[in-house]
Image 1 (cartoon, rainbow, N blue to C red):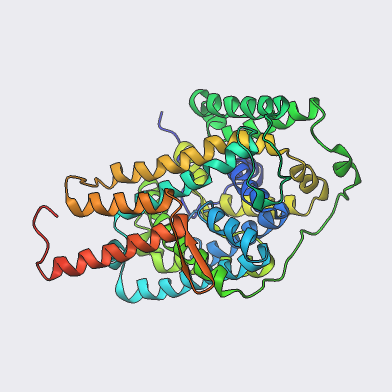
Image 2: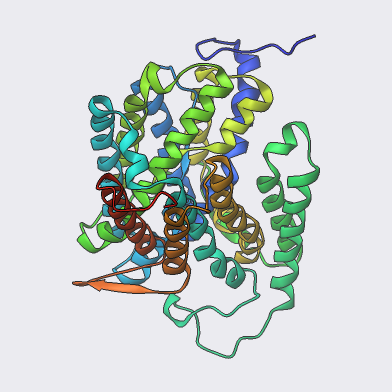
Length: 429
């Protein structure tokens, strides 16, 4: 007997909808709260704005695209640079607002000129390398949180000889092992929440070892508003964060294509990529002003739809409402804030590695031919610039890592495209 398919516009009774919406919430929960924790922001504000943003997105797209907006990982590295160098998270918010405005602008560009220009600006050879660099650039942070490497002096840690803490390493490795086991062994519903399960398991172990400050939870109110922050305009932050916008643009397009294949509808045309980008852009402008990390369409929730064959936008909206409700429960926010860095270090060792591998996956799925010199050079130079620590000073702004690599990749791509149009490059290129 074939499994029932719930269509995009189909409504289900409340008793059926609630567990399905909660499943979507749990699928995105672990990754969504991880981003604000890493950036030192109240996770409740991310849950609130992700929920609000998803409702806005489904309204702009006229209920035609079943997508949940969760916290984006692509902005972690540049945001950390801004936070440590240019005055804190409020400065990074100006870069996040720029990201939302960028998506709004691109939505109009796509509406009138299509999307072929994206492959010229950032072809798969560059895009895959940049996505991989996101994970590779963050990998040292995971090792530091896991107690396997010393913290650098510029993040407020006490400068002293590095001594490996047995408790921290034990908790982080336990969390990592649970995450790995869940990713490869879990089936059914559990298959979509191995990260959340690992974080909970690591948290309970840390709690038993006295590594959690339970007083914070006890003192928290049941009802509490998230911590809003006013952005500080900073051109330096905008320049550093801007390259990540291109990466998320490509991610957004690929997610929409995948969702279309799963639901057997052409979402790129109806309701259209331009409406999808517009909804995402408006959501991110509001998130930036509220003090939340930027949002993006979530692959975790696409995975849930692929497994369950429940494509209803109403189920997605239900998950958004649940996220908003959770963000207003003070004790939930307090419990999240007490997650030890050892737990986050263990799970991010897996997550950052997965992000890096996603870049290599793009090479395979897009069938990048590295026997072509142009692809080989684009990938090689982008990788070297991104992971070597190379940087460039432009006025008061220092570009390095993923941001620098993305810019170099775009410039080289444009040069190669121009040379190709002039018939200067050989056929093997």
